[in-house]
Amino acid sequence: MAKYKLEYLWLDGYKPVASLRGKTQVKEFSSFPKLEELPLWGFDGSSTQQAEGHSSDCVLKPVAVYPDSTKKNGVIVMNEVMLPDGSAHPSNARATILDDPGAWFGYEQEYFLYKEGRPLGFPKEGYPAPQGPYYTGVGYQFVGDIAREIVDTHLDLCLDAGINHEGINSEVAKGQWEFQIFGKGSKNAADQVWVTRYLLLRLCEKYGVDVNFHCKPLGNTDWNGSGMHTNFSTTYMREVGGKEYFEKLMGAFDKYKNEHIAVYGPDNHLRLTGLHETQSIDKFNYGVGNRGASIRVPHSFVNNGYKGYLEDRRPNSAGDPYKIASRILQTIATVPTK
Ligand code: ADP
Ligand code: MN
Ligand code: MN
Ligand code: MN
Image 1: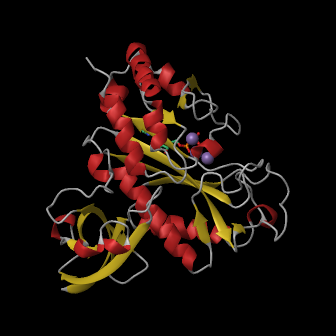
Image 2: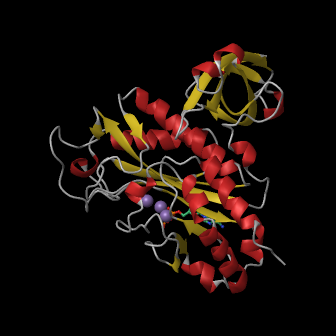
């Protein structure tokens, strides 16, 4: 038997965006614990905007488990928040995602690294040289001295945890980065995005660096905002598809455009302006290879007879992947397949 350190993570009740919370319990297991061996746990919901003081117990229900290579016998446990009667807490968006093992999601998470209130590499006053050389840039003048160490270490921590990273790159604005996570199953990639965010936030603590997930942290300037492009497919889209189905699907995305925007992250009107490779927030369109569209249709999709995955470019960097996946699958479910 060995004592394992179980870091239970959950999302709090803050609005418009939930934050990660975590606390540790120590338990003995004969080997690395499986999900079904992990006990329910609880926390004081009155401290996380999830309950009133007089009846404040919330329940943590483990839903995914990952090794934590930074600690001896370290375990990261992602949880759903439940009410004491066993039903889902209103803040629990994961519980609203349709179960579909054939749904695949790929999230492209952009974010800024911040130190002392400004992006890494920004001077105390004013701005660095304009955008251009920073995207995929190499060299101190473009990426500074600690960002590379942070993102490379972060990638290793995630791979150790079994997170299915597909890649990382520096982005268009100075101090801005991206990682891509792919997963099969309607909830899997979203769980991984939250654990990846957790590992990044925690790693940055020791550098005195904050991760800024706001979609337009530099406001109305020529500096890019941050998105979380969401690539999605279902078994039907990959195996049957077809132009007629695709057009009906896009009709449904148009019909529910406001419902989508409502869960695609706060302050998105600052980012979806029609500039900087975005469509305006109040319009819906799609286009083949079009990075200025709401939904970009990959060339491969058309070449394969309207089969494959689509990229929704509207979700932003602060969006909750649970809410995003939930809404996308809800809209897809309104379109009949035959
Ligand atoms: P770009 O920056 O050109 O938009 P990326 O390479 O950053 O593209 O991201 C593409 C994303 O699409 C990846 O996260 C990848 O996992 C995802 N993806 C690829 N195939 C599928 C699929 N069949 N279903 C869902 N997502 C997919
Ligand atoms: Mn990308
Ligand atoms: Mn990008
Ligand atoms: Mn993209």
